[in-house]
Amino acid sequence: MKKITRIFALALAFVMAFALQAPVNAAEKAAVNQEKAQATVQAGSFTHRVRSLYYNSSTKKASLTIEVNSSGVYRYQVQLLNYNKKKVVATDECSLYAFFTLKKNQLYYYRVRATSYNYSTGQYVPVSNWSYGYGINTGVCTVKLSGKKVRIKTPKVKGVKKIYFVYVNE
Image (cartoon, rainbow, N blue to C red; front, top):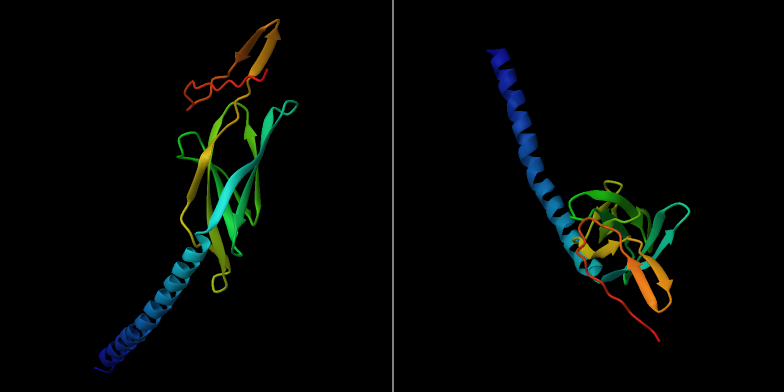
């Protein structure tokens, strides 16, 4: 009889410990969610753009710089996606500029979100939704000039339709 009483007392102690702990965890979660919501409202005012895209013909790679401007003090997570936005090619954590090296004749997309440091976990946590940028085409065209004719040869890039913009300055 003593053994059954001890087991019952131990089980009751566990139930009481978890029952008392549940409201505290729920309150902590609500406070964290409220902090995240406030940070999301503040982090919603950031802009991003492609700062530079430079092709190096000797290495046959393109270097990309993405600039993030913000009114707050956040770090940003910038992801580079493939042509159909389904696979993450590279990720960079930055406060102002993100740098990537791209392959020639590829189509990429990028997305940005704000992150804030969580002192209880010691990690950066997202405080905004992903913000999509435009596509980045690293296709390198060749241009040949002969007399009054110009020949432009465009490479095949997966995910890009044939759209041409030709600007002429006389």
